[in-house]
Image: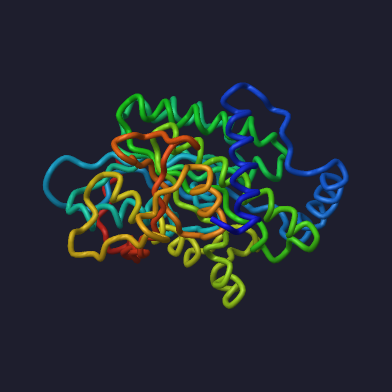
Length: 339
């Protein structure tokens, strides 16, 4: 990696992850002046965005059909995981993911969605406590935006995420984390706040990746994955609050996460083309892999081995790949049984 910005992000992300590991919380990504600017601009953005009404729809239960026992899918995180901004449960990312997973696996999927609007990383422990008795086979987590807007210290945020992933892995659950998305794609967020928010979101996403991979999970960078679409079709991909995705936006995000969820369970279809490494074999030290992924939306990062070893001179080895998004089926066409 020769990109100076990526090298800086890798170094910064490693420092945040290290601080989280050893209990430090003092690492900040913005100066006091930057925070003042962020706060003022955020208040203005909130006036434009307004306050979303109501709560996201719930659709826990069994989705899909097929033979065998249902795959147990847990969805944790904040409003982006809960599906705030749509009225139909079948348009939420959790249901879209369950429907897509059932289609690929040829088995029903038992969905447990415990994501909460406004949740921060510190709320994950409670959410994990709620799903742990269900012994999920896989968990998908989307968290981070409220840590950014709530000025949570990055090391504290990453420490809480790492603890949640570790707990899930201890009960035998595979974990896929959609890392902090890029607030710089949200139109009501003006400059210079947009630039500052983008910097913080990317560095938090990189630090999240380091922590998740070292805890035994995998990540998919959401970043600005919807950015081009938001620019071209904001009326379609934003919900009425102009902050949360619309049904089409959630479907686009689910299409990117679904392949990694399937791969984590070992059920990615053989007929699909293999993943695309960035270069050579795609293996790098985890900090550099995390920094690269943060700047390239849709990138999956997983743990790797080199010469039979998980760790090298620069830390944990990781593999980057760009899986091809898989469109999710229309959830309305998928059988659903509430339980």
